[in-house]
View (cartoon, one colour):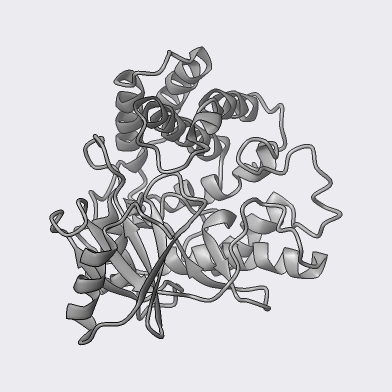
Length: 341
């Protein structure tokens, strides 16, 4: 039985919202590097609880409130999301804010190899991920009450400034490759083209829930980094596996991915563009920016591992990936690995 949550307080909180008491079973779900996640069995009902981690947090980090808001806004859209039920911002209940959503049956894969499925299904799962992203970017923020979900315009400039600042303020040792990459993306940031979409911020295979038996996405998970952003930021991030290795958060580089049925990055981008509302091209900048931002995120993971409040026991092992992703971005820039553009 999981003891990291006050189960007595949680059971009382659920009883108040569901109109009656029932037996509560709590089980932590592995896999997250940020917000601890739990399966709740409350009588015959099943839910998922997402809660902020304990300990000191960076300003704006672990934004479960944003997760709740964007999934609630997208509930009646063409974007598949779990049904969110309740947001509890009172830290007095469980010591930290949290929210509860319905349990969603499906398959979540820990890496991009999608083990255990046929090559035909594997290809379709990738292509449906691309189509799902296009449907997300087609949702107009103002139509679902998210017009104030972020600052429109100058997304890349603002993101570069944000993540550069986080790296500068980090307690981890400096990474020369990341410093070089920061200088490159800063110097090569394209002029703002005015494109604004609901950006997931971590759109990848590992955050897709697929139907239990069919090769289609039934839920997009982990919206902590969502905002109003540029659609090419999500797309650049989602093609990252083709330029990273399996030990680098489950990439495809160096594996026989084509024999497994995985489409080429060009086919993936084409599937996105076939349903996208614009015809913008994915460029090496977008790919390098995605790797830069992911490297900066792993700098934060290293900091949390050092302070002892990372959500996953694997945080210390994953922390060195900041340097690896920075190197991969420099390879993309100098065309030493297969990119899309």
